[in-house]
Image 1 (tube, rainbow, N blue to C red):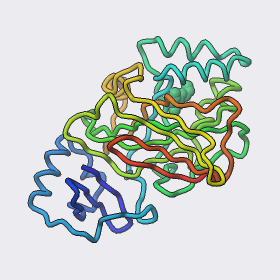
Image 2 (tube, rainbow, N blue to C red):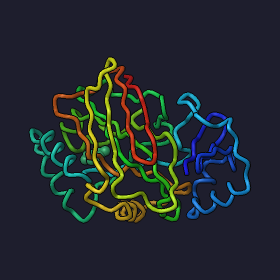
Image 3 (cartoon, protein in one colour):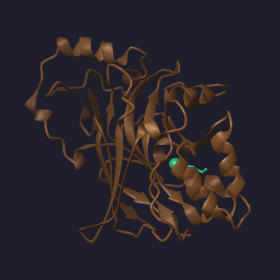
Length: 279
Ligand code: DO4
Ligand code: MG
């Protein structure tokens, strides 16, 4: 089932029917370990409404309330290789190699909810950055108790020029206003998402695809539960949290985003998150 956060309330789509909000309080609704059975039971007593079918992007908001957004890095071989190349000159390349093989994963704070944009909104590139890419990432929704109950598409917008200059600049390369996008919905399945789930990235410039790539999530080096267990070691989350799981799709080194580019991130079972690039 899918939960859409809209300007007029929370809409649930389940078995080809749409229902208006069981509650208006996003944070309380989603932070339940029994989210799927709870919603299923409530929907069995609810009346579907055609009014909420075919929601358009301008009705949707990012599926987030008071949650923090965290991110994992170097979880796919492609990411490790691209970052080793990018930071060779600075001498930072072997950090990526080492973290890929280490027991402890790379986890970093990505964004507060205020820095996150939703479907159809503008993601930003930094004015002091010369090399920018989107990172399409399966993003987990985890309850306060540490249970993964949902998934969404995430965009971990990144400055490769700042990151490549010095690994210690990572927070500036990754966290700034409009640096994260989430949506189009929170996908709440009965069972964990399947390993053959595919992530696809399309970047459109002047109506032409200038980059297309895809990868299945089973190419990831680490387990979702492993990332969550490290994140929850010494952090608590009163309203649950989001965790991006890293990118396995990196455009070639001569590619950088331009203002006006459209970024489409599609993940099987979840849908497509579309954003336009602004400065
Ligand atoms: O280590 C830098 C960031 C890695 C990252 O964001 C990713 O692999 O997706
Ligand atoms: Mg990333």
